[in-house]
Amino acid sequence: MLASLAYGLAAVLIVLVLVIGARFLLSPQAAAAGYGVPARQDGDPAYLTVKGLRDFTSGLIGLALLVFADAEALAWYMLAVSVTPFGDTWVVLRHGGTKAAAFGIHFATAVTVVLSAALLFVTAS
Image 1 (cartoon, helix red, strand yellow):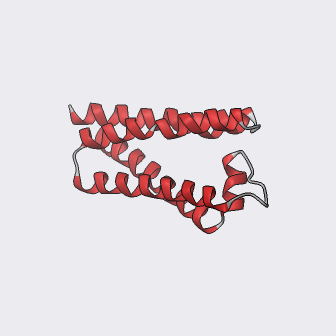
Image 2 (cartoon, one colour):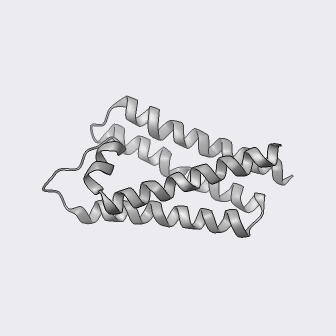
């Protein structure tokens, strides 16, 4: 039961990262608004593309670990990748986004990713 929950939560989080990355690649302005810091219409779209590629690549790595590695390797990945939403919290707060977006989206995601890692570590032992 715990293993199913651990792997299921990890799978959901990984799919969400893939979707977020794809959204930044396909609809960067809308994705940036959803991130919590809207992009300027005249801004350089390269940075939004970089964010999309970063997120999509993170998701692909997670997917590969989910399919081909054990729970401990996936747990270490989830713990390491939690730096991204923790960092996103800081970015949103630093660049004029709302506290609701920073904590309600990014910090909550970071905590969920850490919880996923913890569940996977328990499953691995």
